[in-house]
Length: 222
Ligand code: G3P
Image 1 (cartoon, protein in one colour):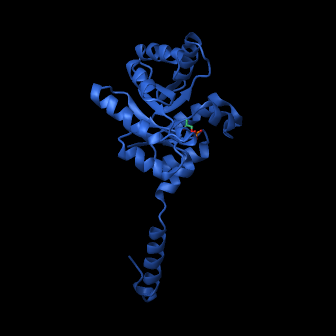
Image 2 (tube, helix red, strand yellow; image 1 turned 90 degrees about the horizontal axis):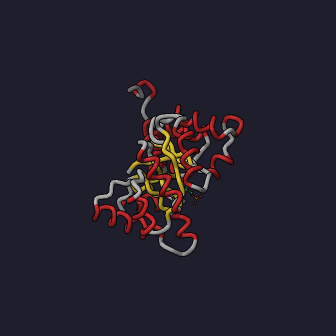
């Protein structure tokens, strides 16, 4: 499963990229509005993210009618070759998605909460579909069921749209998304670093190092 970082914070993106842990980045208007980078200028932040991460970088339109979405999306796509235009799962969003795809622009259709929405996004040739797991869990609905249903539908009909599990809140969401066959998951930085941690790793390393110190100093050479 590919791992994307769901943030517009450049410091977090640089750290994860340097560690070789991410395949791409997703942003949204909320994340961009809160980003501290490049004096808070969204376009400059996106330029910097694209220069830092070679993989796909999702940048969302904020218009709500198809013509304006297409205008905005084309501007976003010019920022860098790795921009993926993000459009909401509305009638206009899907019209815009088709038009982007006809011009070879990749599209991440976002705010997906049902399998029927995901089916329509695939028929509109979306590159990625973003089911929001955490927000479904927030309203007492199993977000993971949605990932499983979309996987089954896409595989049954040979759709190539990639499932990008979004609104991930904790490591177990990542595990379950991977088991359910999501192609990618987009994670807040906190969750990415949580994936790495295990107390037995820390404990085991401390024990190895303590034992090594027991060797006479002259023999502690590798
Ligand atoms: O980028 C979209 C999505 O990941 C947002 O997550 O936590 O705001 O529901 P959240």
